[in-house]
Length: 390
Image (cartoon, rainbow, N blue to C red; front, side):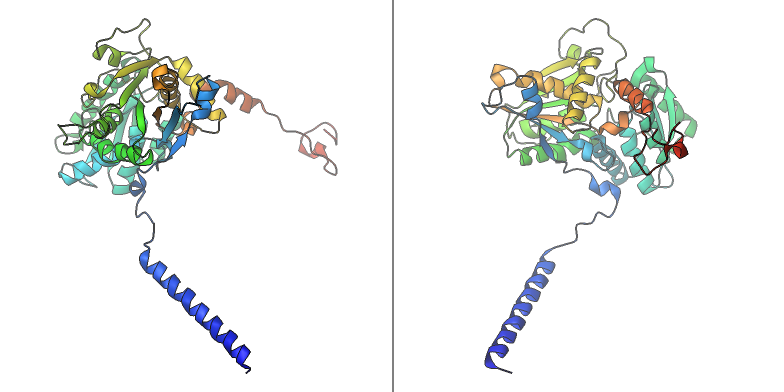
């Protein structure tokens, strides 16, 4: 072997050994990023820039005004309620209040909380019975049934209070010690998870530059927990990070209970609405009214229109996201919001709402589509057409 060949071989061996060493070192420094169960995937949802929506509505973004969405729709079961489903069950298990295989979970829910509870109940071995208003979409019902839950529908006119009354009746029928209601509207584990996860995530991912937080009110957990974390809360030992954060609550114009609770006046034509996931027909006990700086009511038609706009920029969302983004655009358009960043919650994924009235025209169009004839050499008479060319 020539000296040149030997040198080349030694260099190759040395390079291989170095690569192997680096690979080994890299492997030793890393751990496998594999979730052990579905509920471990809850949280750490991304933010997305929504300035295109602001521009479409004539808002000047050249001065630094910015709107971003918190994509809770990317949770394991596609909604912000994944967080509270896990938090409430974890909390009840830690306190010994529920036992897998023994306790039946009973909960009144407008849909997404039920789905969150359903997938964790299935994961951990609980029987789950959910009550909900009859207005909830067929997709939500199918999700719950597919996850092994029992679904009980209640009259739409009674909204969540009717579902709550039915849930209590079921608990009584189960007998003492056999059933447990997590009570999402009263459970402190609900806002707690948003103080511990959602708020810190928003603060981290905006590098503390969030100025305005816009959220719908269903149970009140998201808006309360996030605002308590960023604004600070003596009650929960939260030091203030940005006490001047503007917190904007969104509710259906057809059901302005939060407006009234904050000292405002309810509008005309109060009653049923089409914004699933908010406007539950009550003021939740866990809602921290003190952190709310403004309540913006949005009617169902405007919420649907904005949801459709979000779909048209490639972001499939539900109608509640339409209501929240509609309100966020209103706030961002104000002179005092110039140069500020608003974060709007995107609560759930849009595919869950295809039987909602906002998709009626799309459904009709989809059902009206007809097959088209194929080019040569296909004989289209074999596929039901009148002639070989269709």
